[in-house]
Image: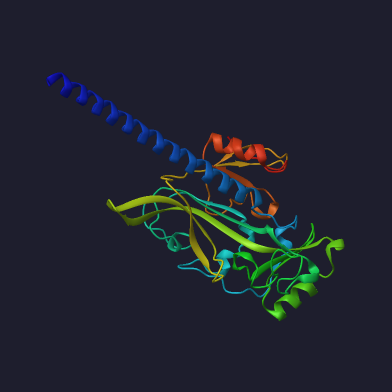
Length: 301
């Protein structure tokens, strides 16, 4: 009898230890999966950031735009600030004022924020169909029915001129076509404007085991249905996010040196000079971005 109890106790102990090991391994796997997804998602957005078809920033005109303002100070002026295609904000410990801080709910203290703006190459429209509803052969309509709720578009002539406008407004569309006339053969392309502001939020939910709080990676972006700036969840399990910058001061395609975070670009490195900064969460994420980025864009380690 005693021997039987000892054997049963041993079996139970082995089973309990095995189950704990499995749970630990499963938890580690989820963390790694979340990290990979977050890095891939942010890396893809970074590679698209500040893309205005080669147009100098001082040659981009802002026409009439549809309201995309979100909560707090994230108004149209902040959202459509093309001079800051890549803009980083160092994490804070208190309550921030102004955009993007007062636009973020349940912000996780000390985590960095990264705002990216660009003409979205994944949402384009031919000049012939610009402003029209979904047509045969087109993956989407080139008006308010386009993906991402994109009423605001960017029309650019490669390396020359750019124009932001509301595609649902007949007068705004006409002004854009007058300012930049021609077709694809003239190097004229049309893309939806996009913004993604990556940040961390603490999200509460109630499950079978009670209330829990989970850290999540979010993106402030234009909502698909309302056309307004909204915070959308990307992936959970990201507890802290920090970035590093490298500055390509010689336009060599590689960072010349690392620089710190800034709220606005310092006078010696103005955004209008065409210089770009690159951010990544860790050495491994930088390597991942470097391996897939174009020759003119390189992340630091």
